[in-house]
Image 1 (tube, one colour):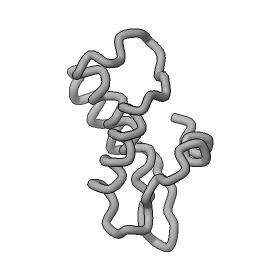
Image 2: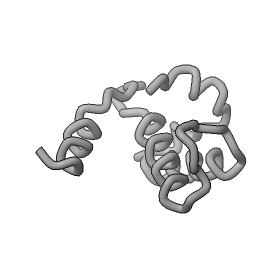
Image 3: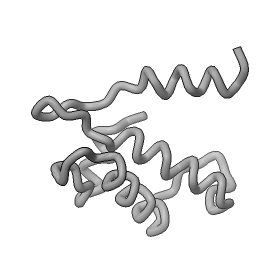
Image 4: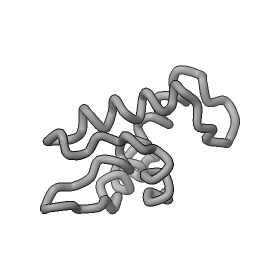
Amino acid sequence: MTDLSAYLTRFRKLKTSRLGGQEAPYKPALLLAVLEGIEDGSMLNNQIIITPELLAAFQSNCRDLSLSGRFRANNFALIAESIMI
């Protein structure tokens, strides 16, 4: 299995919360925000530091991934506590 296929398998098996029959986009949104930070060079160390850029990317990804306006990611502290990747 190549590295890419291993990651794809893990991403497909990512467990997400379900609220009212809809999947909450928080885990995928945070994961994408972190990957974007690595790609653009804003995350250089082996640490995830909550920055305004990370929050903005996370909120943007939540909006993009949500099928409805239900999941807005207004309180990152509560969301981050429940995600625990």
